[in-house]
Length: 350
Ligand SMILES: Nc1ncnc2c1ncn2[C@@H]1O[C@H](COP(=O)(O)OP(=O)(O)OP(=O)(O)O)[C@@H](O)[C@H]1O
Ligand SMILES: [Mg+2]
Image 1 (cartoon, protein in one colour):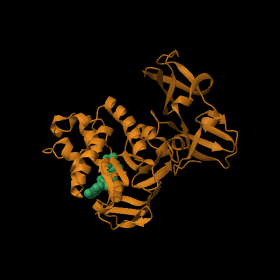
Image 2 (tube, protein in one colour; image 1 turned 45 degrees about the horizontal axis):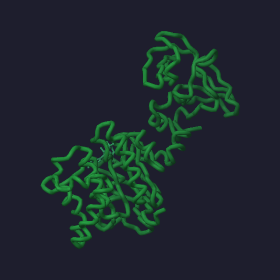
Image 3 (cartoon, rainbow, N blue to C red; image 1 turned 60 degrees about the vertical axis):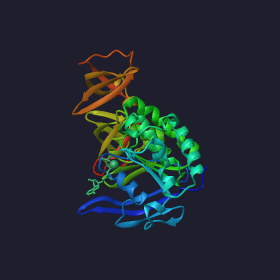
Image 4 (cartoon, rainbow, N blue to C red; image 1 turned 90 degrees about the horizontal axis):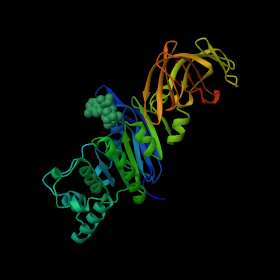
């Protein structure tokens, strides 16, 4: 495991005029981690990354890298490499010169540049394209060129802002796997911004989930999936995300409309909750929540059965062989252990 590239953000506040982009972000990232910043558009991911890179100054808070306070250190002296959504390649330079650029900037010897450029290009498999210009490359090849330019210097931190979003779906999946392998082989702490929960879930060791300028949860993909910290996180993670229904608890009973479920544990005084149920945790059976099938979506190996249960829409993921028809009245069953409960008012997990 890498020994360098430990990141610590403390109380980062960022204001743009009267818009507060970050309301006090605290975050620690361990050396060598592949760490995702995940959240909806406008939640503050890019701002956080740019502050970490030194491209923007925070109004409050400190940035530490490997124990040193770098809050006031210039971007060029932070030893970070960044890849943006737009690859920002120099159009008039060849691929070779684009990759060599960061080394030339710091006055590296010519022979050392040559071997470093060839090695970086080979790692991302564009070593046969070194003589071309960016305009003569496909989107995926341009993206690799930007990656090669970022890794050529072996930075302390590798910062990526939605680097795959310009690629088509198939290439995005392939490149995601390669990026993960590349990061393992380089063993460089990587902070990866994405609004795509599936991308974050598959690529990251750990992730921070941003909502409206705040981090609302930090954890491994498994932790976040198994125990979303709030209704907002629950509604963001999973494809499709979990069903969220209004309910009421009293002692060890959960009521969803007229349907009652024994929870098997006493949750105290009666109150309003939001009930979370993953589509894959649901099944049709002789007992359960009464519902009527609205629509069936065929997804290949599975089907998504979309039902109405009272005022709520409920999605249930079932085997492709299951026979359901639009308009069927069914009962939706689930194990008490699969129920997620959130406080209605605050949205916090119970
Ligand atoms: N230069 C700016 N001036 C004013 N407001 C800004 C500026 N840059 C960002 N913001 C605001 O700060 C908030 C956070 O923006 P940020 O770019 O960090 O979001 P993001 O999570 O990266 O979103 P996206 O997924 O759309 O890229 C947004 O509300 C945005 O409108
Ligand atoms: Mg962004």
